[in-house]
Length: 196
Image (tube, rainbow, N blue to C red; front, side):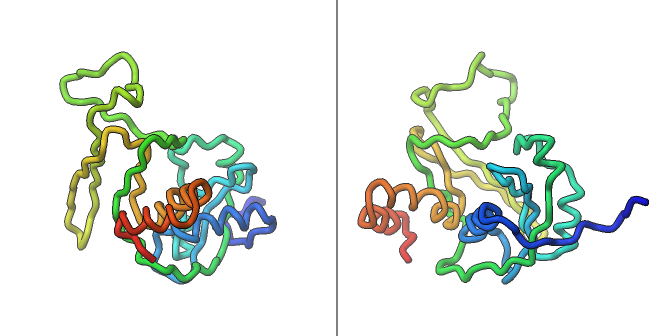
């Protein structure tokens, strides 16, 4: 007899599961709570994370929903999602605020949804990096039930945009520190108005 009971949380059982969760929570969790539930695939090597929630019920709703096709998960990853938690969120040493920060000539693997301009004007292929003449980020959000939208211009040679301070701490500064050293990283933080 099959059970319709909602999935229950488990704790990570491997070092790689703990590492993936630690990486996700150190700077990137968009939650205000002190502990969270994580919907994550237990399939190596990526251990894809579908979402982070503060409430078990929200995690159970998330695990029952479809994974976005933009995430490019395999069938095996989708079938092997688990709810991990509760996991204590580490104390942050900065406010994780929205502060879009661009990084020139850096490549990533996340795919965005292409927006075709009104009236066509679409070329036969995507632009080469040196063909980009303008880069703009448009963000829409809701605050106190009121919708807002704004756009930020970036240099045409921008190859990555870090939307929050946490994203920069997770992906931008460690790379620069590893390659150029602490002094470079500290100077870059100061220039970006993101000192410790």
